[in-house]
Amino acid sequence: MPPAGSRPILDFVMDRLEPLRRLLRQSSDPENPSAEQISALFERLTRIAVVGLSRDAAKAARRVPSYLAAKGYEVVPVNPNADRIMGKKAAASLSDIQDAVDLVVIFRPSADAAVLVREASARPEHPAIWLQEGIRADEAAAEARAAGRLVVQDLCTYRVHRALFT
Image 1: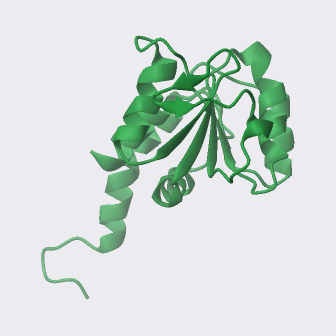
Image 2: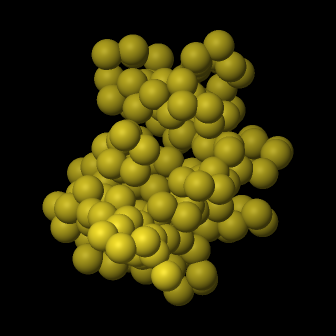
């Protein structure tokens, strides 16, 4: 039993996730995973493939992956138009990444996202799939979810990380 006047651990956890719950309510996809599922994902993440990682340091598709790398995640750039990004060799496509990844983050327009969601869903290690804020591929996301994949749409990984860890 907790000491008199203290709050139970469950209340602390619930309060810790409230900023993430607010972000989830702002997303246009009501089928996104719960705050608890997203928190658990970030707790186990080590390696993130970022499709559409930009060479332009001013773009969100570069700033967000740079932030994640600074927080200790291994970021694998995926960009067919670049040899190196963020000091790392860029893969031309997801299929060019030989090692397992825990998460595939997609920074491509919604019109291009469905094929990338399907490619990520087909990976043998079954990574989580994340479409950044403003990006949706509803049919492909539904297929991936039906196959047991964790899929997030229309939500910024930077904002979620900040909500969880600051």
